[in-house]
Length: 402
Image 1 (cartoon, rainbow, N blue to C red):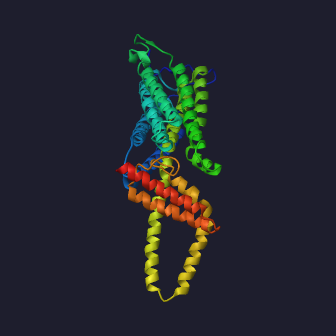
Image 2: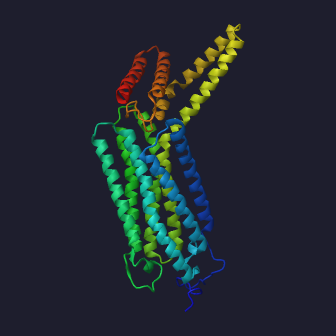
Image 3: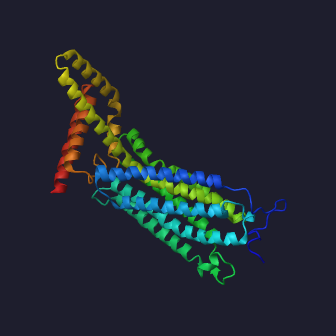
């Protein structure tokens, strides 16, 4: 029996095996892989820039995110290799020899999946912990800690279930080797269901924490929008369960499993992006502050050269006041978005990743902007509240750094 000429699955009655130019999902594999790696690399690169150039500090969630990106790249590289080798075809268009080679690398992919996904999920959970918990170990703190422990146990157990799926492992790809295995398709279905539960938990957990914050509903919705991208991962997880069920019912393993693999890398990409999104407001404010500094330098030079034209100066101040008046409705929400990142203080947690001089400067500017926005209505209440936020933060930072 020549395993290089025998199909790995008997074709349907009206179809003949084609080992030369069969139908393939390779175009979808390439398109999805390029999109996933590009988006993941862009968001993680922004996170690295923020951590090195702006915050100048790293935490465990950052290293987990970087590990997830490297693991995702390795996963995609192996996936493209086996897809091009024949995994993207119908199983009756794959020879027995090809199928054995594919199953060897597929068993490697299964083992890579668990630590990569665990790193991405834990990165998000540790990020949520840093944003929504303070020194007090309240209910929110213990719920997040429980989620971290549960996800660690689940993905660690899943990793060992894939490592010891068959004994000896050679029985996975070579049925001529004596051994025994657990049901791989049933294990995949169970992992898909538990993974979906984990995605739903990672979506609802920040929503629950945000709902308990004392802020207007509009601001709560704006804060939740940062984590709302995780709903895409939930949708992908649902489709993934459907495909896993189809694998149990349909013997065309390679064709259906290829589609499931594309969903897997898409899901990991979404989780990585969700972990990076809370960082982006800092990048926005960094760029905005730099542009404002350059604009002030330009204005000073212009005033020095045109000091004999007070009418132009008055016109410039009037124009500036008009622009600030138009933006006063977005002042609080924009500042909240800035502090929706590790080190947030304004009603969420304490500043931990910036120097006290930088944060005092930014909070003075925050208080001044809130005061200006409220001053146009003749009210001093918001000014007092903003100054109170700044003074309280200065006291907290002074005590924390001493």
